[in-house]
Amino acid sequence: MTLISYAECSARERIAQLLDAGSFHEWLPPAERATSPHLAQLGLPCAFDDGVAVGRATLHGRPVFVAAQEGEFMGGGVGEVHGAKLVGLLRRALRERPDAVLLLAESGGVRLHEANAGLIAVSEVMRALLDVRAAGIPVVVLIGGANGCFGGMGIVARCADRVVMSDVGRLAMSGPEVIEASHGVEEFDSRDRALVWRTTGGKHRFLCGDCDALVEDDVHAFRVAAIAAIGAPDASRPLSLETLEAEHALLAARLDALSGAAAGDDESFRLWALLGVAEPDRVPDLDVKAVRALRPS
Image 1: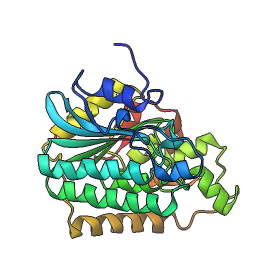
Image 2: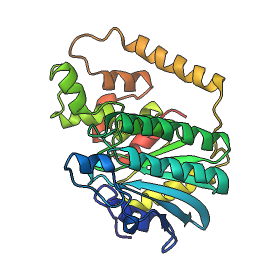
Image 3: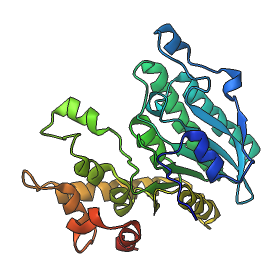
Image 4: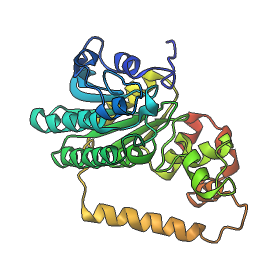
């Protein structure tokens, strides 16, 4: 089978390759011209779908709702209309109850051009996503685009039931350039690609338990992982206070264990060692299968 790079595909190419052939029915397609009014006022180019495709489809014969962000338009940034389409998809899921909701995330976060409108949109997406989870409908996020999944969408991703990443995918709250701009190159050198992937990349997130499945940069591999995710006995993972408290305790313990790091120490390697990886310095050079074998059960 010919490998098709997930990272190199557009949003609609991912939809066409990932889902059952010909099954995608789009809501608010480009012909509807649902564009951002804010960008037009600033004299900036618009996209007729505002950078996200939403609709219904089937995956391995099962009905799903899907949203795919287009990283080529403003880095997949979330604005008012973009966010409203995501919220509308999730609210419709509550009414029609598909077997799952898939979010093909590729975003640098909120569009600074739309400021508060974008921030409010992300908060509404998070609330709608958690409502869908509370209703027992699993939400699966797929991350493997060239822009990664950062900012508000990084938070949205971690609100989902399951996260699937490729080894070239990236997930974090703040992007490398944002950290460098805020705290200086001494804190984080965004040009150090090895550092970027050691701290935000798919291998790191998988070893830390921040994503559930690590796959190759291949659309078919994402399809197989998505089918497995929605077909798992515990596909829906209802939130509880106990679950959140356990997660907070785990993160606090990790921070405490890493607090004594000396200047110049690489915390990624130290964290991998803390997680039980025997030779953490080898992780960046390992393939996906080898990394999957390293994560503690």
